[in-house]
Image (cartoon, rainbow, N blue to C red; front, side):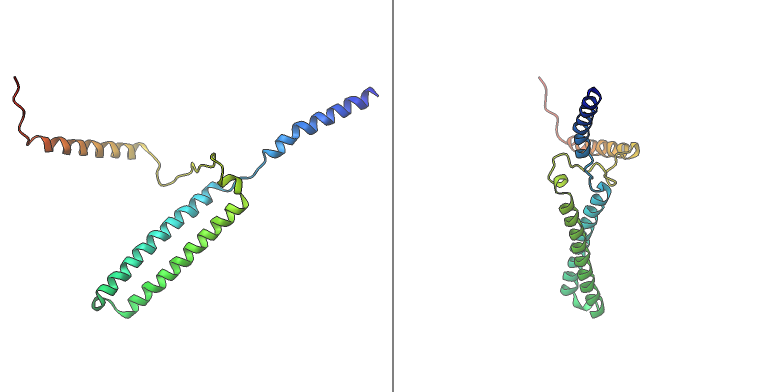
Length: 149
């Protein structure tokens, strides 16, 4: 009887302590893939904006461009829109799979391959700041100095 009670208590304890562990095995989406998708969407938007500006330039100066150039630019716009739609659809599917992660305030993307601060980039930023400060101070050199008492 004593052995059965000990086994029951042990089973109850094991069951209760393993339940929170199962809850902690929530799989998060690949942060690298999410960041890649966001970067690709931004790249597609920038390419679309540039290509549309190029098309407006072609329409403003039709004698500088051939019809083939214009048609190629239009086809490029369609391909970029298709690329943009595909990336957004993939990102939406990830959002549907992991709704809790996207709505969570803890869902940050620490993976940022574009804005890494390295010693070299920090030195360049400091030199740039020093150059800007010296430019501002040089502008004040031509001003007349106030006469003191």
